[in-house]
Length: 112
Length: 114
Image 1 (tube, one colour):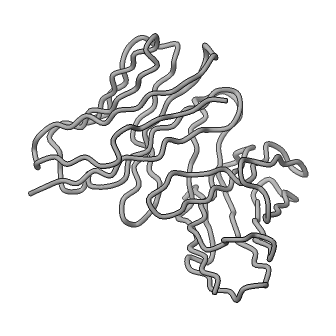
Image 2 (cartoon, helix red, strand yellow):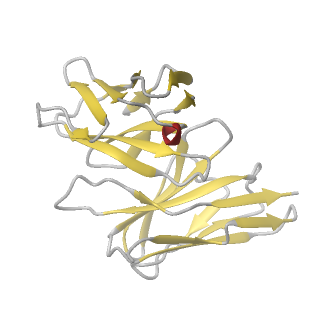
């Protein structure tokens, strides 16, 4: 079964600085998708960024970018110019043909 | 506006009572999912459905039941057999073909059983 591991339960960043959240996954599939979701205090799950495994180019969405290392099965999220509104739980997720698997989450604190 | 609605936002029940959580989507998605989230933890899959009148158990289906009579609706019943029903419940939906299959989530229902 596919597993998703987020090894950082909590992270902290100074406003305007850059932070990287780590995620590794285990799979024998070659075709799959990876996602980062954000869950702010409202608890609404919001899609931050997606990455198709067949694409070598790392996905970017404004201040959010990923470092996708397929051979290493690593999918980290970089947040640049961190803002107070970025404070939330961040979940890494993996999906192939079946259901989606989520990591346990990383709680990000942004210090003013 | 397209999206997923869950109602109610907060739900309180006495132990021993069954309770049904509502989930409706107007995104024309084929697949729908129910997750449970406990404090400080990730999402655990309860049930999912890829087509009307069909559904599959997830990792923690015991004590829960679902139905999928319409494409738009996927209600979850928390039965009295569920040992620890107090939790935050999230419903999601996704496409099955022609996309990256990300899941779209509803706002969630916080269930408290005393």
